[in-house]
Length: 436
Image 1 (cartoon, rainbow, N blue to C red):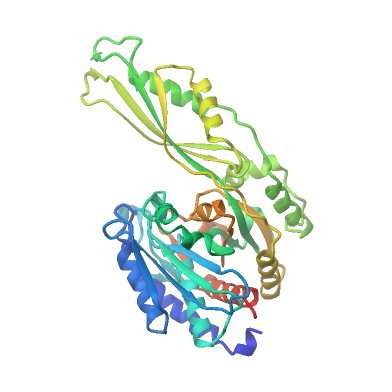
Image 2 (image 1 turned 180 degrees about the vertical axis):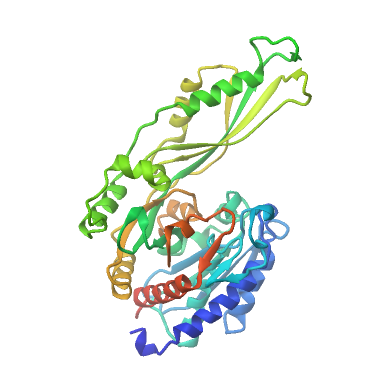
C-alpha cells in the first residue's frame, strides 16, 4: 500500500534531516528546559500545512503542545507522544558542539539525537504525510509534544495528569520512546526491534547520615561521613534477586525461535554478564549518583548525604524495597528519603497495534524480529498506562547497538539511514493501524 502512495522516501528523509538538525540546535537542556521554543518550532511546521495547535504552560517557558488529525471516529484516538527537553551535555567531553547538530559520515550528532528529538521529528513527518496524502484514519491521530520528561515530568505529563487529564485518558493506544531497533541486540545475528509495553519504576532516594562534629585531628566513632560510606558499601554489596519476568521470557523465546543465535542461545547468567541492559531488566538496580559532606578540610562534618538512582522491575513495591534497604544498612542514624518515585502497570503485549508492528517490521526488514522489552529508563508512557492506555515504546530506527547505547552519553548521534528505515516503518504502522 505504501508503494501505491508513491512516496519518495529519500526526499522525506532529506526533510527529516533538515528538520532534525534545526530542532537539535534549539537548546532545551533540562533544567531549565525552555521547551516553549521547541513547542513553537514543531507547531509552526504543523500549522503551515493546515493543522491547528494548542499550547499549555505549566510554568514560565514550560510549554507542551498538541494537535490532531481528525479521523472518522470509529475508534478511540492513537497518540504519537514525544518530549522536547534533553539532559545536560558536557561539551568538554564531546568531539563536536553538542548543540551544533553536525552531520558527519552519515550521522547527525547532537544532544537529543537519540533521546528523543529524532522520534519527535519522525512523528511530525507522519502527521505531515497524512495531511499531504489526504488520508482519513478511522480514529483521530493525536500528536503531543511535552515538556520536562527528563526531570520527572512535574511540568509535563504529571502536570497534564492534574490539570488536563482528558488529554491523557482520551487515546486508546500510544507510541512513544522506550524501544529501538538494533542490528546486534544481545549479540543477535538478526535485526531486532524492541517494543516496550512496560518500564522500570524510578525510585530516587536521598541518604542522610548524622554524627558528632569535631576536629579532624581527633577521629571518633560517630563520624557522619563514615556512617554514610558504610551504608553505601553495604548497599553496594547487597545481593538482590535475579528475576526473569514473563515479558523477558517471551523475548528470549522469540530470539531463540528466530535463530537469533545460530551457535546456540546464551544462558541468562552469560547475558547478564555480557550486556548491562539485560542485567538491568532482570534485577532491581541501584546507581550511586552523588555524595556530599563537609565544609572544611580539618572539620569532621555533622552530616553527609548521598543520592541513589534506583530502578525497580514492573510490579515491585517501592515501600518494600526501601524497608529492605533499611535492613541492609542497619544503622538508625542513616535516614532514607524518597525524592521521586513513580509506578505504572504494564500494557498488554498482544494487541491489535503490536500485531501491526510485527507485520510491518517483518515485511520491510528481512529476517527482523519484534520482541517485548522492559524499558530500563522511565518514560512518559507510565502516566498514560495509569489510565489504561495501551502505550508502547517503539522507535523504529535501526542502528548498531553501540550507537543506541549513546542515550544521555557523550557524542550522542543517530545514523541517517536509520531515520530512513524509521520513517518508513512508523508511517506504515500508523497508516495500517488507522486504515478505515
